[in-house]
Image 1 (cartoon, rainbow, N blue to C red):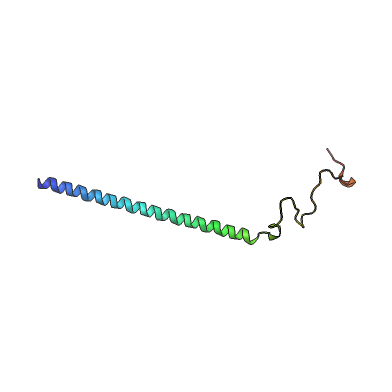
Image 2 (image 1 turned 180 degrees about the vertical axis):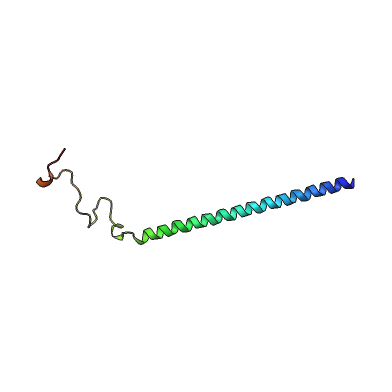
Length: 90
């Protein structure tokens, strides 16, 4: 009877140790995932800051269809083509 009690107690201790190991490994995996997510977020924020630093703010308030002052005039499909550009080579 005492041997059975010892075997059951050892089995319970083994199950508790296994559960503790499982919880600890899950916690370690969650911390690693959080670290990778933080690194990815910081990399994305850094790239976004680099893009925003070079952003052309002169066109930020223009409505759609208004040409940028440095890009020339809007193309009018009905306008006549100048003679020097009219010939097409096939």
